[in-house]
Image 1 (cartoon, rainbow over the protein chains, first blue to last red):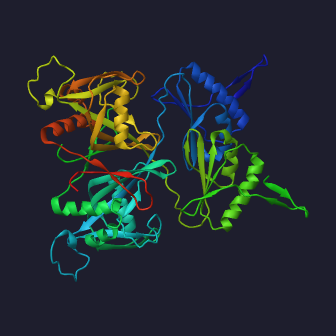
Image 2 (image 1 turned 120 degrees about the vertical axis):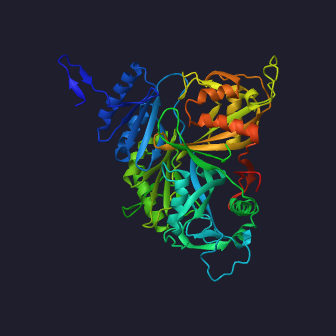
Image 3 (image 1 turned 90 degrees about the horizontal axis):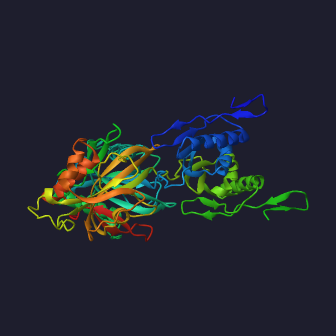
Length: 287
Length: 287
């Protein structure tokens, strides 16, 4: 019961339950259905209350099943902050001063996995003539979807990081899912930043070197048309036509790796000032 | 006029104007106010129409001023895809098969700028005794906001990339804004990936080396309490207490840069297969 009639005819209105954050704001998460008019009154009173308390940001999280409360929230002056498939987060900045509302996420993170097999375990019948880069095999796939669909162009396995996933874990997971190959992570060899990849968002593609721990390919049916170990020379030949594409550079990096021991950034666990979560710093081993 | 009464008592309903995309989907952007019931009928008819045409994803973009159409859109089976302060994007996947709807952005990208001044231009009175790392100065700031606010800890300038901004441009911009120093970009020395940085989103902090082109500090009032050129030894001493923090590693990297010429990833322009936009690949110069 959020509203109580008093004897003198006026009434008391409750305040929406909220959780304080460490930056001076409050978060309200509405979980159960509520009448929009009732919600409107409660929200208005709550805003006055939080203003008096000197709060700055007010966050309202609405699950998609309560889409009927979006209009009311917007009418009280809230703007959208971010949305995921099943909720919408709105925010209201109370002070007249500089807003410290965190910016929305702007990038999607993808990995491209470079996995070389210089032992040629998979083609037993072939006599190893030399150990040059041209006898080294690269794990490649033909995709069922995506921009290279139907072109017949073989590419290194790529994939998108899941929420909260580390680059090194995502690379290992994607390779396992797409090709069945077990790997261990070595380093990030390069990365590409690209804009307007989807809507106005950008993406970062990390080219990662992984060492294969198994060699028998079991391809994923839903996303992959075919997968194979392909001589690097053959892979490179496909991509030479487009001089400056990232896949052409992937071939260059393979060659540099084999020829001169090109190294990239290796992950190391670090801590942060204000929490005990471990995060990873990717840097060259020389520091 | 979207609805037309016909002589036999039935009526024709229009289809919402849409733009085809190259992945088999359509996008509808509602710009002008519309009665929710009328919109509902149009959306329903349009969905049938697009299903017949074999379309896959239907995108509906609603500006915040049309928040009254959100509920209707959701009731027709749409889910949220992403939101920015002034619009909400919803999506409906028609086929029964594997969805190729692009994942939402998961990362915010920040830069940390390492700017060393081994010429000591700013302190003319000081006699240069040696050119070791301990006589090199580092550009540091005291922040008014953020996690180090009020701690008295000096840090390297940091900032968040704007929509569509390149890492190297963002680094140059942030340093100019916060300290007034002009710089040129050298390389990315390391990066850190951290999760749950805000809500369930992650962030990537790129530690960038820039070369100063000017030396007189003009600090930004809104975000910066103070800025100075500080001996690296003094900077490092502050951060030694927290052995594994990213700012401690920033000091290690400065020392490695001065002592052994530590290099990171330099940006080079590349193209992509399917568009003519230039993007940047960050890799070591050796490829």
